[in-house]
Image (cartoon, rainbow over all chains, first blue to last red; front, side, top):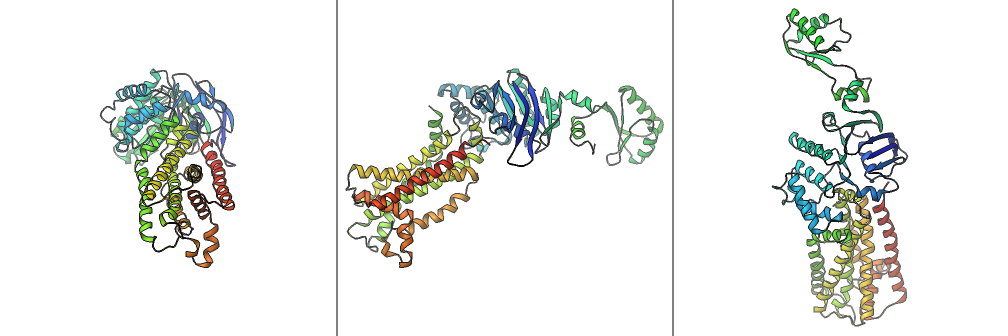
Length: 309
Length: 245
């Protein structure tokens, strides 16, 4: 449903904002573009939503080429940008009706569709207030609803949860999850790894305009190795003793600031219980001990900045 | 309803207050200037309201055009512009809607000016043809300048600044023109500027249309200004609106 091949974009004569970007998202799947500010996420979304022309490469959205057939693409997409693109002086409902009619719905159709979306997005209490008085979370929700007035085949969400409080973020997550159930293909961008992990079927990690890794969340995590056994001690003075006791593990990482120690745990729970037994022998008091897989954060840092990690 | 009609209706709804100003300001201007200046400035055989009406109209057309800057800039910074571009409508529709608004605003201001001046004894004595020419030139002027203002606002994407900055030269051009007073009322060294600057030229043409006495050279100059600006600013505005880099 989204097919991107060797996409590149250079603004003016500057450094390429995107180069050699290729990925594809099947129908009904959710794909997350993950990266820092300036990594090329928004540029990619802007090209795919026909706001920018690619410098080279091709991109098919809903089966149509964004460069040669932008009108057909626009008929099949919904776009929610980083900032709410709403008429602040209208109410939420009026915005829905207005954009519905701009997309060619008749007045009565636009009204009933607006009502449907208000119910679906659980906004009945606020629908008839001016958008200018909405909270950030409400604006984002109505903004996403506006992108759905005519159900698109592909939905673009550019940083849909940036600036939202945790609860509103969760609301947006639930909305995104419901898109897949409606067979809507979603491409979202995010700086939050947790978000990409939870929401998406596949993740594309961008850095300086290039793809540094892509795949499912599990595949990406596997790339950076196995699980860790991590513990936090009550008394940081014990750290040197602990390091000595665990010296036979390949990599012992000691973080004096947080009072934590981690060692690779290729054998999982067996390793954990071995570490625990040794701590018991040393008579060290632990605040916490756990087995954990590398977080996407670590994957991200590892992939985008291998020297530091 | 088409996207064009929808967007025009939206602009009109948002501009309610501005439209009230469009009607009230030229009337107030006419009343104020007439009472202040009718015994001060000699306008020959022509009554002062008859003399000053074209200046009021031009002033209204200039000011109406300036307000476009803010509308274009607001559409851009609110992100509405970008969203429109992802909709299956022509990218030029929002520009056309803003221009339709300016023409409607101009039409209202013209009607109000005529109505107000009529009460003070202003008459068009030249017939329907000249009256149409008057209306057409006034609207062409406001459309041309609106396109320029639209290009500015659309490019800069900042409200407040642009239209305020342009307000000063606009007021100066009208003050230092033969709109409010004949050229003899100005100091000698200003005569060349006052006579030949475009606002004076256009006001002279419009005044000529109201009484049916026109000078070919002057009409050609005014037409050149109006059409020249229409073409130049039109190309600019369309290019900025249509750009998809």
